[in-house]
Amino acid sequence: MNFELTEEQMAVQQAARDFANSELLPGVIERDSQGKFPHRQVKNMAELGFMGMMVDPKYLGGGMDTISYALALEEISKIDASAAVIMSVNNSLVCWGLEKYGSIEQKEKYLKGLASGKKLGAFCLSEPEAGSDATSQKTTAVKQGDHYLINGTKNWITNGGSADIYLVMAQTDPQKGYKGISTFILEKGMKGFTVGKKEEKLGIRSSDTHSLMFTDVKVPLANRISEEGFGFTFAMETLDGGRIGIAAQALGIASGAYELALSYAKERKTFGKAISQHQAIQFKLADMATEIEAARLLVMKASRLKDQGKPFSQESAMAKLYASQVAMDVTIEAVQVHGGYGYVKEYHVERLLRDAKITQIYEGTSEIQKIVISRNLLR
Ligand code: CAA
Ligand code: FAD
Image (cartoon, rainbow, N blue to C red; front, top):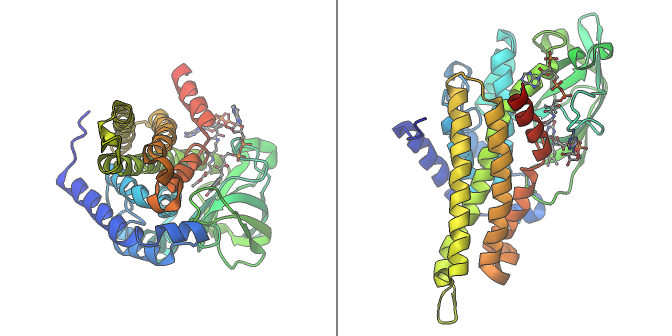
C-alpha cells in the first residue's frame, strides 16, 4: 500500500497545522481550565472547510478524501484535542451518515448547513444504560400519523449543548431488539427536547458533553433516516468511519506530546549536558517515535481502504485500539521527559495526557475494539 501523500493532501495538512498554531494554540490552556467551548475557533474551522471535509461540494462540503481528513484531525489534535472532537463528530458521525443515507430533502435541509459549518451536529447513541451494549436502547419513537413521538434520555453527547442538529437512535419496535432501532433528525428547540447538565471532565474539557432528555418530542416522519429498523446498522457503519477520526485524534495527541518532549529534551540541561544526551531519555524518544509511526500507518491504512471503497471495519478498530494506547504511553513519557515542568499546565503535556484517556473510551472502548477485531478474525 502506497502511503505517499499527494500535493493536495500535504496542502490540507499544512493548512491545518498553520490554523492550529495560529488560532487554536492561543488560549488553549484557559479554554481547558475553564471548560470553555471554542465557538470562534469552530467558526474559523468552518470557514477553512474543516467541518464537512468529505462531503460532496454540491452539499457545500470539501469533497476531500479520508486521508486528508485524518491528516487535518491529527494536526488539530496536536494542539487542541477538544476542537478536534467537535470537528470529528460533525464530519464523521453526522455529515457522513446524512450524506450516505439521508433523503435529498434531508440533505438540502440539514446537510448543507452542517457541511458548511453554519450548523453544528451531534450523534446520539449512548444512553445511561446503553454504552458499549448499544443494542439495549431504551429511547422510543412511536409513530402517530405524520410524526413520531420520541421519549427517553441520551447520555454523554458531544456537542450536546452547542449543536443545532442531532441524529438520535430510538426504538420504533422494541420487540425486534436491535432490528427495531431507527435514526431520526432532531433540531434543538423542538418542544420537549431538553439539554441536561454539562459534564465536568478529566480531559477534552472545552468540548461540551451533555445528557439530553426527550419528552414527547414530535418529529416529522420526513426526519427519519432511511427505513424503520435501519438505525443500528446506520450507527455501526457510521462508527466504523468515526473510529478513524478518533484514531487520528489519538495520533495527534501523541505526536503533539512527542514534539514537545523532543524539543524540551534538547533544551533542558542536567549534569552538564542536555537531557537528550542521557541514553534513558534518548530511548524514551525512540520508543515514542516508533509507536507513533506504527499508529500513523494503521490510521493511513484504514483511511486508504475507506477511500478505496473496501471493507475497513477491522482496520479502523485496530487503528483506534492501537493509536489510543500510543496516546496514553507517549503522553505519560512526555510528562516524564519534562520532569516537574511536565506536571504543570504551562507546558501543555499534562493536558495532552488528560486528553489522551478519552480516546480509549469513546466511539467504543478498547475492549469493544477488541470484540470488533476478533469477530472479524473469527468470522
Ligand atoms: N457495520 C454494519 N453492521 C454491523 C456492524 C458494522 N460495523 N457491526 C455490527 N453490525 C450488525 C451485525 O451484523 C448485526 O446484524 P445482523 O444480525 O443482521 O447480522 C447487528 O449489527 C448486531 O450486531 P452484533 O450482534 O455484533 O451486536 P452486539 O450487541 O454484539 O454489539 C458491538 C456489537 C460491536 C459491541 C456494538 O454494540 C458496539 O459497537 N458497541 C460500542 C458502541 C459505541 O461505539 N458507541 C459510541 C457512541 S458515539 C461516541 O462515542 C462519539 C464520541 O464520543 C465522540
Ligand atoms: P460501559 O459500557 O458500562 O463499560 C464499562 C466497562 O466495561 C468498560 O471498560 C468497557 O470496555 C467494559 N465492557 C463493557 N462490555 C464489555 C464486554 N462485552 N467485554 C469486555 N468489556 C466490556 N456517545 C454518543 O452516543 N455520542 C457522543 O457524542 C458521545 N460522546 C462522548 C463523550 C465523552 C467525553 C464520553 C465520556 C463519552 C461519550 N459517548 C458518546 C459515550 C461513549 O461512547 C460511551 O461512554 C462508551 O461507549 C462506553 O460506554 P459506557 O460509558 O456505558 O461504559
